[in-house]
Length: 433
Image 1 (cartoon, rainbow, N blue to C red):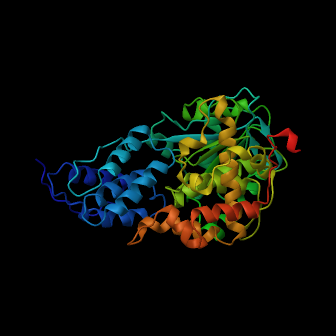
Image 2: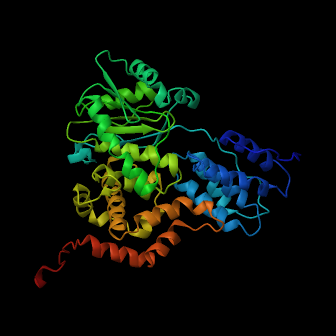
Image 3: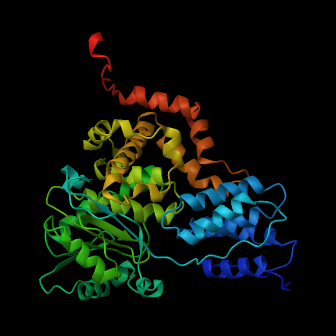
């Protein structure tokens, strides 16, 4: 029997985990109410919004009478979070099914995972967008876990006043004696092909202002390291993944990022850096909104990749993604279905699922542009980001309905009207033609 008291303030996630485990091992009634203020305070820090924090928060609320609904909302965020391992997803599902003050101890999953996820595609569009085609010889696009220890990855981080050391270390990891390097506005760019690294850094720097102004996405303090391989051959991205992070990415990967060492690896060309900007959004959003819904994060990253970065905002406009949605219109998820999808739904487990994933990605991107056109993208983004930090948490579905003043069915209908696509339906009876 454990009956230790929880004292002191936890200033790291590891300390919070230790306190949570201590309380979780106690006999009922468990004193989770002592921990919740610390969890909420940590959640407000940069990088504090994570599935690990939400799991502890959700299981804690589930043990407090009257707070069960908030606990379920936090645990549903776990299910939808980026890079959550299967064991943690199963644990969250078990707690949701028995969320009450008399429930047994919550399962204790491993809280350590270095997620590596990439963009795959056979075709690179203007502004470095990407598209997956079924006729291409592509593997799956599952989120993978790097075997490189977190402590080792974090040793790769350098503050701007140590940029020379950052360049030296990155060039050593690159291992190409012909590689070029440049430090530009918070980015260390190592180029083994494509444009000069200075140009790539300047291109990415253009996205910093609107990310901060429009979405409050302050970039991390340490330098972000970008490894570019030009636009041919994309197989070099996989070579970098094996060397830098110890993972085998699917054939056709054009870019990927890892938050723990603030790195981006991808193809680049002289016209734009859209696929790299896509990954920059992932790094920035995990710093500020690490438990963002899959549709919001992936849709926003996809739209930013084809947007025009201005001084304080992004100029979203029609792109090839609209054509992608039209092409797979019969597989388009409704708005209600879109909100229920998790990161697992954005991966193709085999070639037969590629069209479904393409339709989902296109719908997520187009819905972001719809919200922007309705001037609701910012309000929805910030409300979802801060929901669990408020005294009365709201589900993502309720937030969207509240901000748009419509239910989900009406929102879907309004989206269809805004998108303006009316596919012709063939008459099944030729005699009526």
